[in-house]
Length: 345
Image (cartoon, rainbow, N blue to C red; front, top):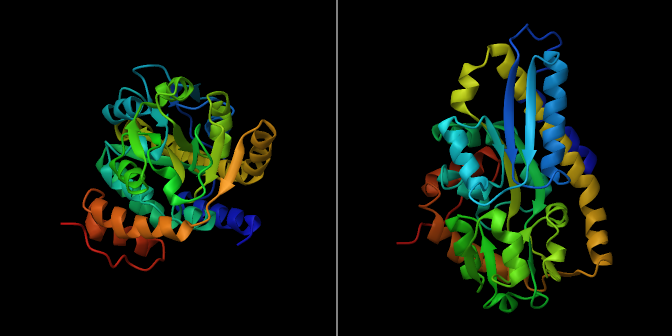
C-alpha cells in the first residue's frame, strides 16, 4: 500500500472514530492542561505536541490552553509521568508504549516481536476497531489514549560492531525500558537486557555502561545518540515503536462534553500529523546519520529472528500480556489470523 493510501486510511479511520470537527465549540471557562513528553521537541513528540496545541486553541478560541514540556530529568522519567497521569496529578503524558506496560500490562502485546510486518499493519492496528480494543485496556488502567504517535521500527544500535546476523547479538548489553516482553525478546536474541530509565540512557551509552539501545531514526537523532558512541544501527523490524498520548480518565471526566470532543478530535488530528511526519522525514534522517558516520546494516538472516520470536518469546510471554484470548481478540480486530500457539508452562 502506498503512503498516500496509508494517509487516506488513517484519515478515514480517525474521522469515523471521533466524528467531524466541531465548528462552533460551546463557551467554556479558561483552563490549562499540561502534557509532559520525554523526547526532544525536534522529535515526533514535538509534532504531536504542536498539532494538539494548535487544534485545541483554534477550536476553543483559546478557552482551553495546552502547555507541553519536553525532555526528562532524573526521577521524572516516562514511567513516573504515566503513573502521575494514572493518579490524576498530571493531566497528560506522551511516552513510549513500553513505559506504560507496568501500569497496563496488556499493552505489552503491542511489543511482542513481529506483531506488525510493516507500517500498513501498524496504522490498521491503531485505528478503528483495534484502537477501541486498546482504549478499553487503557481505560481499565485509568487512562484514555488520544493519539498514537508513529515513531518507526525500533532499530538496534550499538557501539561494538555491525549486527547482521542473530549471532552478532550475543553478549551485547542493550538498554530496555521496564517491559518484560522486550527483556525476554533481547534475551532470546542472545543479548543482555539492562533496565534503564529513559533519562539515564544517553549518559549510560556515552559511558559504556550499556552497549546499545533501540529506537527509530528520528528519535535516535533527536536524542543525539550518534554523539554517545552509537556507531552502528541495524534495521531490525522486530517491534514498532508506538508512543501513546494519554490523558487521565479523572481529568477527562471533569471536562465538559464539548471539551472532551475537541480533545478527541485534536488527538486524531495530531495522529495524522505524526504519521505524515514519519513518512516524510525518516529516510532523510537516515541519510543524515549515514553522513555523520553511522554505519547502517540490514539483517542477513531475518527468518531466524522471527523463528526465535514466535517459538520462544510469544509462548513465554503470552500469559503476561493477558493470555492467548487477549492476543487473539486484538489480532481478530486487526483482521489477522488468530495465534495458534500455547502459553509456556
